Length: 608
Image (cartoon, rainbow, N blue to C red):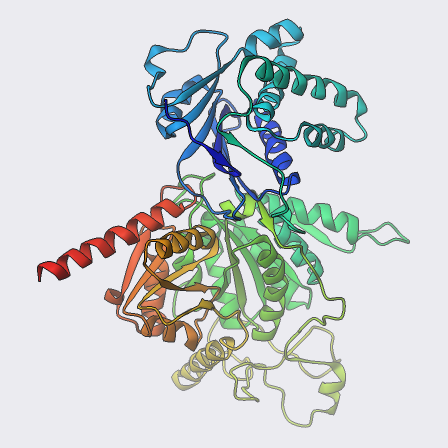
């Protein structure tokens, strides 16, 4: 029978039941491989219900350093009878099906082209543990021990991780190591170990770390000086606030008084949350909120107010599957248009799109500078995949000499020296950005009324058409100014005919697909978009290629629509490569769709 043979290159998926404690055991396995110097990419795929439904945990192991989702499964650890039929179909030919053989396997689950590894997990647990809860918890640890033997994970690394995980709870260390031993010894005694798939220690990780994007966004906000947070709980953004609270409690507590130098407010809804952020930002604090697609819909009215009244706002949108409630615990890139043009009327918002935890950290800090500099909402577009999954990342670094960019703010001294009349919305420098003042800056100068209704350059209410048009055109000038401040595209070009455009979490899978295309004689250039508004390099890249594929994780090709709308590019010149099933886009999907299009196009050319 065929057996997959591979060293440091495979995908393993754990199929469990939500609420059984499997996540921590599966994470233990993933981190052990990472400690061995092998790049990994774990994905936690969980239901929105609390417990009882199927959950999966997939780990991509790649000595080559690929951390995007590949597609396909080489080892399936099938611990959930409910999902076993589906799990069996996901396993590739020659793969390994690990299951609990305490009871005979249902004949319906037998395939001739895969390898079965039966572990009597329930039997071992009944023999070793009297407490039913312990039986379930240690069952997970036992199969991790067995996997260590089967794929040759360094057992000492596992033991050290257990000791580290339960530091301060020493009574738990020995029972967990015993459970690992039970699985490890059983596999060693009953199977030829290692199997065809194995790992071997290397040094392909370097100084990289494992961290989720939400934690990195929280740290970036903290380092940027954010001190006010207002939010309403929604998956998958809640852990961002949890992380900020944890870090702020450690780093933002007054050492003398023990008081908090920050404020976190859980609002009654998303509209209230962003309203509080607007008030705090207007008063000069650095403030933010975090939400997902449904929250953005509710926040749109205040986002329009902030755009028109020109109040700095930072919003983190951790995207999930929509529309409406959609699939709350699945990932997508489907909020682009709703965020770019949030609110009624002619509105344009700055979007920043990170691809890695390192960029989450950096772009979070940049977002506060941009919001202050441009006096407008800045929306950071992450997603569930990046936000909630541990991802291998460059270390997060901060330059202690960095100064916050508060933009154009008149101080009390500036106002005192001013002889002309202060105008909040006067375009003094020709860049579309006026000078603001903060409350209390001067006892008699610099005051203005912030309003969401039409106003003139001096912030006075008006319905004069000329004043309104002048203000709206100035906001467009500011939009043009923003192009020099937002992160530019990441372009890799060798002047090939074919170009790939992608953004956010599509980047890693796109890179792997590009390498596979190159291996098959199809050379491509690439552009990773990192922000809206687009600068001239974005338009030039698309204009410079005969065929441009735009890779997105949504149904309606929203980035393609934005490129067409903002740059005037003919949509027909941009070929969509789409995935919107709620799972991270795979390298296989990108490669197959591009390869299929090129094959068909080549065939048509020959026929002609």
